Length: 298
Image 1 (tube, rainbow, N blue to C red):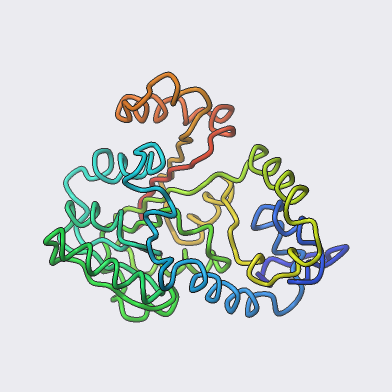
Image 2 (cartoon, one colour):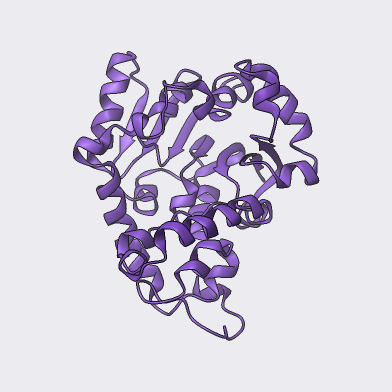
């Protein structure tokens, strides 16, 4: 974050102490300029604790938390994209960053020669292992470490296709993550990302939730509530791709208002419509989800 501080911010965001609402609503790049010195290390510690608190032990039922396998609409568009739209001739050697329970890792593996799944939470690693056993998948390797540490065990330029599926909004060292992806993905390799969209609709929801729930001091001073959960903007996605050396960037907006009612449970038709409409800047801005496709430059 410190590399982006080119001007003196008029005030500072201090974790657990002040300007929590500003921390929540500012886009990642702008927010970095207001963070107090030492925030990176604090967030490393808080995010690790937040992951354990949210997904360890009995809470490792990640699929239930995200309603996967309960309502197909909740896993849309990721499952449709991974299983039907993106595979093409296959994913080759794939990388799944922030694999969680392996719900999408399993779908990737069915179109890949092998998959490296990075997941730091030990209980979720066991969930991935069990999922692969039940699915008779033998081509998945689990790396149990924080993403930037895990990269050290993966040879450079050894990845044909990299995925970051609803995980990037948990990372606060995003530039480093994309530099890592740039090192690991071979020239001509592909990058696929699905992330919640940080737009005006998101900001309004956050402000309302802060007003109703998090305004009392005892809540916003709780460290775990400062765990990184920052959605992404279109411009940030393009900026991060430049850092990683990815080109031919295509960003499509999904979850456009009204289309679920129009297409119901026909996810294929809905996805096809949004892959056309969701490229239009005006419509893309109001989309709740963003899907990115890019290719590693030579």
